[in-house]
Image (cartoon, rainbow, N blue to C red; front, side):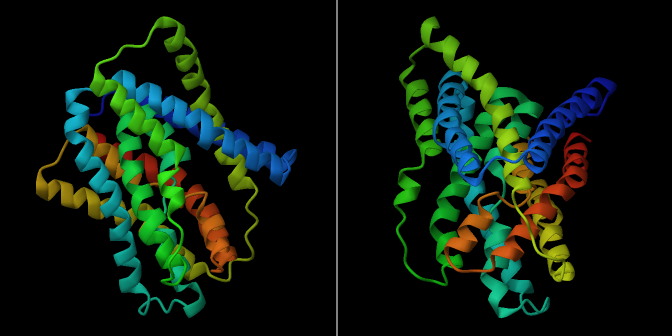
Length: 311
């Protein structure tokens, strides 16, 4: 952490302005001249299954250092533990908050699933460069482990399911192969490094555009759950990251990896939340409303958290 000076503030404003502009542009395009559901699905697959894995492979392979490898277990563990913290918090407040029975699994699952890929990785890259992106990916790896196993167990009502998707996740494999490349000590020939770097320059803006368009395609019903939504959003955007920051303060963990973890912990609900919830027969409209409003409120909450980290 460092003191905030004029240059830091300028860089922070530029990073958030860029992210909000591109994300908002995707949102506006989808609302004004919407893509079909099939087209948006294909664009999401292009980013998640091809571009983002290639980008993560390249940045992981080219920027991984001894320091990165040394903090990797901590970041992956944080990615596992923070969603579990959210789940525990949600479980504790189910009765005091009078959460309806039909919404309980959705409430618990929604706090666990954060937008650490489409939004978290670009934000960490904008704030901390490629190293920040690699750290964000390591955290996201831990999150994927817990969400695609325990998380789906929660949303499915405790039923067993096929966890094959976890082991076929291209984002995870992109990172794993990149780490293997770096450990082997190989360097990229220019003919390979140049196109991968160009793809990397394209990937994050496209991820933000697709993320904004995906958010705009969510059509939540009325706000009959105002109190419940307010509690869920406050827990996801404020309570969880503050608990994480407090624990790090007690542990004396104060470095870039800690900052990335807190930022990832402060992300809004993941865009895939609605898809998972509907797939397992839970409350899709509630998840849609929570995803939309949590993302909008992140415009306020996240800059405050980043300023806190830099102060």
